[in-house]
Amino acid sequence: MDIKEKLAKLVASLKKEGVRITPQRYAVIAFLLNTDSHPSAEEIYTGLLPQYPTLSLATVYKTLHLLKSEQEVLELEFSEMGNRYDGRKPWPHPHAICTRCRKIIDPPMLDTAAIIEEVSKETGFVITNHRLDFFGLCAECQKE
Amino acid sequence: MDIKEKLAKLVASLKKEGVRITPQRYAVIAFLLNTDSHPSAEEIYTGLLPQYPTLSLATVYKTLHLLKSEQEVLELEFSEMGNRYDGRKPWPHPHAICTRCRKIIDPPMLDTAAIIEEVSKETGFVITNHRLDFFGLCAECQKE
DNA sequence: ACATATATGATAATGATTATTAATGGAATA
DNA sequence: TATTCCATTAATAATCATTATCATATATGT
Ligand SMILES: [Mn+2]
Ligand SMILES: [Mn+2]
Ligand SMILES: [Zn+2]
Ligand SMILES: [Zn+2]
Image (cartoon, rainbow over all chains, first blue to last red; front, top):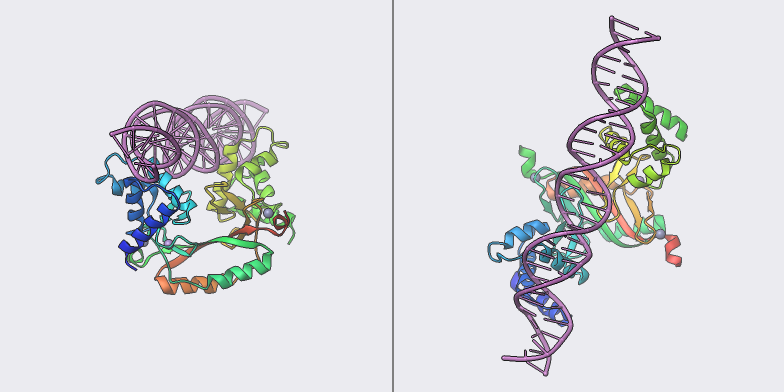
C-alpha cells in the first residue's frame, strides 16, 4: 500500500469518527505519512509554512493530540530535544537515536513481545506500553 | 555492602575528585542511597526540607547535575511526570513504571547486552546508552 | 445559502528546569 | 587568629516547549 492510499484510508477513517478534515489537518497528516524522519512539532510547522502561511504552531500541536487520541501517531517524548512523532508506525516500537545529528530510525523489529512477557512475569505488572530507545552514533556520524 | 558503607565510599570518591562535600550535597546523596523509589528533584527537596529548612531546590538540581557528571546517578527524563533519579544503580537499566501510582521499579535484569548487540548490528549504530521503559499497572493497582 | 458546532490562530499562561548573582562559609595562607 | 580566596548556596529571574484561552473563521449537514 503506497502513501497516497494510506493517506486516503486514514482520512476516510477519521471522517467516519466524526473528525473534520480541514486543510491544516490534512497537511499535517500528509506530512507525517510522507516522512520517516520522526519530525518534531516545530519541524512539521516550518515544513508546512511555505504552503500554509497562516498555519499556527498551536494547530499543529492540536492536530498531533487529535491523532494521538485516535492512535494514529506515536509520540516520543524527549525533554532535551523536544517531542518527536511517528505517523507511519503509530504503535510502540524500538528506536535508534543518534546523539550527534539527532536522526531517529526504526531498527528492524526485535522480539519485543518476548521481552515484554519476561518483564511482566518478573514484575507482576500488566504492561500496556513500552519505550525502547537506543542512543549512540549513526554510521555517518562515526566517520566524523 | 550496606548503605552506610556505600555512602562513605561514594563521599570519599567524590572528595578524591576534588568535590566539596557540603551538608546539602551530603544530604542529597544520602537521600538517594536510602531509597529505591526513583525520586524526583522536588521529592528530594521536600523530603529534606524538614531537616534542612534553608535548602534550595536549585541546589538539589545542581547536586543532581554534579552526580550525573560523575556518573553517580541515573537520570530518567519524563516530560509528563518530571525527571526521576536512581542513585543506587547509576547505569542504564530497564524500568517498569506504573501509570496509575507512578511507582518505578527495577525489574530483574534482562539480557540487555544481547539486545543492544542486535540493534547495533541491524542499524550500524555504535550504541552508547539506552532507555528501556515498560509502562503498565503494578500488582497493587490492578486490584483497584 | 444557512445554521451551528467545531477549528483556527493570536496570544497568554504554565511549569519544570536552568541561569544569574549577591551573600555565605570553608579552607589555605600569612 | 585574621585574612584572602573561591566554590557553593539561596533567592530570584529567565527559558522554552507545550497548553490554555478566546474571538474569529470555517467545515459540514440541511
Ligand atoms: Mn519509529
Ligand atoms: Mn532504577
Ligand atoms: Zn548521526
Ligand atoms: Zn501502581
